[in-house]
Every structure is written in C-alpha cells, then in structure tokens.
Amino acid sequence: MNAPETPFRFDAAIATAADRVEAKVVAWRRDLHQHPELGNREVRTSGIVAAHLRALGLDEVREKVAVTGVVGVLRGGRPGPVVALRADMDALPVKEEVDVPFASKAVTDWNGQQCGVMHACGHDAHTAILMGVAEVLAGLRAEIPGTVVFLFQPAEEMPPIGEEGGARLMVQQGCLENPKVDAVFGLHVTSIHPTGRIGYRSGPLMASADQFRVFIRGSQTHGAMPWRGVDPIVVGSQVVMGLQTIVSRSLNITKEPSVVTVGVFQGGVRNNIIPDEVKLEGTIRAFDEGQRDEIHAHVKRITEMISAAGGAKAHVHIDRGYPVTVNHPGLTEWSVPTLSRVAGEGSVREVDKVCGAEDFSYYQQAVPGFFYFIGCTPPDRDPMTAAPNHSPRFYLDEDCLKLGVKSLSTLALDWLAAN
Image (cartoon, rainbow, N blue to C red; front, side, top):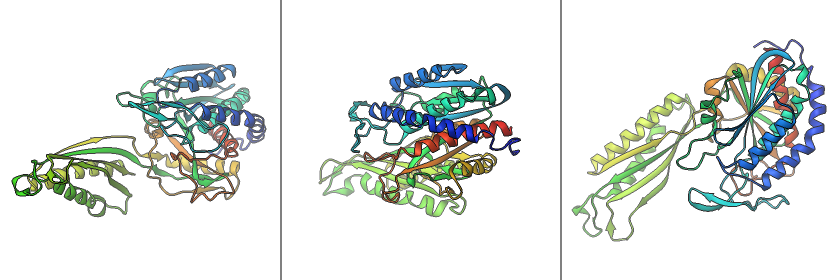
C-alpha cells in the first residue's frame, strides 16, 4: 500500500471532534448497557442507531439488514474508494454482577429458557464507538476522499437456534455491495489489556469455532453382567482419550496451534445399569482452514473406529461455526503506524493468537480486513486477574471509548487518503 499523500492532515480535526463527542459516546454506551438485547432481537438498539445516522444526514440508512442490522453510507465530498467500519450490537444471556448505576436488570427468553441479559462482551461499547465515529466523519464529509460504510451488525454471539444472523447474513444480503467495499476495519474491547493499549496481529488472529456431537450406541445390560451387552461408557471414555491424540500426534503443531475439547459426557441413569447410549459434545478450535478440515476428519475417523473396535456404533455430527479471523498482512502492516500515531509509541503491541472466535471473519473472506483489540481494564486493576469478556463481572473502563473513536476514524480517513 502507498503512504498517504498528505499524512496526518485529519489528525487535529479528528482529535477535536473526538473530544467533543466523548460525553455522548459514554452516554450511549451506558444506555445500551442498561437495555441490552440478544442476537436478532436488537430492535431498540438498531432503532437508536438508525435515528442517529439519519440525524447526521448520511446519504443512505438501511434497516433490517440481516434481521436487525443497520447499514449507513456516508459519501465524502471528494471521489475515492470505499471503506467499511463494523460494530456488533448484541448482548449475552448472562445475569450482570457488576455494581454500576446503569447495570442491566433485563430478563428475557433465550432458546426456551428464562435468563438475564448483559453486555458481557462489550458490544455496547462497540456500538457507541461507531456511533461516535459516524458523527466525527459526518462533520468532515466535505474533505473525505471516498465513501465510508457503517456496519452495525446483530447476532455476533450467534442468533437463537433455528435462525440465521450475524456477519454471514449481512454479507449475503449485500452489506459490502452498492457501494462495493474495498477494505473493512473493526475493533474489540478486551479486559486482558489495560486501557490505552491496542493489540494487533497479522494473519490468523482468532480461531475458527466448530461444535461436535457424538452419539455412541452400545447395548444395555445389568451392571453386574457387562459381558451380556456393549458398554458405551467404556467405549466413550476411549474415544475421549483418542480425540486427545489429534492435536498431539496427528497435526503439525509447528504450523499453527489447535484445540479439541470434550465438554459434555452424558450417559446412564443408575449405578448398576450399563446404558444403551452415551453422548459427547465438544469444541474444535483452529487457526488454519486446512487444519480445521483435517481435525474434522480425524474426529470422525477416531470416533467411528474406536467405537467399532468396542462393538458399538458411533454417529458424529460436526457443526461448522465461524471461520478463522485472518488479518490481511498488507493491511495490517499499513495500519500499525496509524494506530501508533493515535495511541502513542509503545501503546500498540503485537499480541498472541486468541482461541475465541469472531464472525468478523466473514467480512475478511470477502474483502481485505483488519481487526484489532482495545484494552478496557482501568489502571487500578490487573488485566491478568480482571474478569474476562463473557463474565457476569466483566467491567469496562469508559476511558477506552475515545481511543476507539479516534483509532477507527483515523484508520478510515488515512486509508481513503492513501488509496
């Protein structure tokens, strides 16, 4: 990528505008935090977003994209390419345990169960940050050399069972077309870094996430007479141990790490009855799409062959989840100096891979994309012991919000000017 023809020319204007909008961003974040909504149910949230974008005078605001998503288009005063900025809007089925005045008291139904609702992953911050970015850039419209597309996405944490949603559906419904997006940027707040820190990584950043379910059918018999049946508990135990050899013995772990975890083992109802069937459930994480496919094949082969050897039958079901989140190497290399300029020298660091998954990966499969982390643990807390994202005790230092606004705004305008 080329260096900007007029480097830093937007910095002062962005800094001034970010200072001006910071109080609004904090207020939006608190309001969204107090009124969280689950995936594909972000009706109030998307309504607030759409009203804000229209009030800014954006050229186009599309609602109900991928159920409850909002897409805004801001055409600059000068011709140029198209860049997209993404924020996810949904909360999690988690009962909040953080003592703040705007804590969530929401309760709703999730897949047939009553549960609390909380922005335990910081998507309230992402939404408020991008609303602030939209206001900053709308104020600079006349000077923008190109077009900015704002993607307010629902259901990153997965839609309810039986529904489609999230980034994949956003892409399918044309969020990167008309205008055709050339690059996409996104961020995620995280408690594992202190406020003021930005973390990045070129190439694979976050893992793919797949779920597997295994049903092993034996033959029920009295626990005192195991020879009269086929014990699926013993076979299932051997399968669990066999699955542990996939990463340790079947993959080239010098290339990329991976994880195969069995989290559920269910079978039997009484101490002296060997049951007919057991069920295993687990997760598969990988940082390479080829290795991901290899793991799937190994899970199926090992499970079926060990079961057959024990006289049982196995049925393996693997549900593919989000792909690997892969930062475009060229776009990453170009982005780091911009982030360093915004956050300050020493505040932008390369980070380790993260075994969590992100559906930002679907945008990156369509266009070059760059995804980065912003720390949100306050100075008086240790990031190593701070409650992680998805915890009912996840706490966000609101001082991180302005850095989010400045970094996304500057990335967008620097990239448009450079291209």
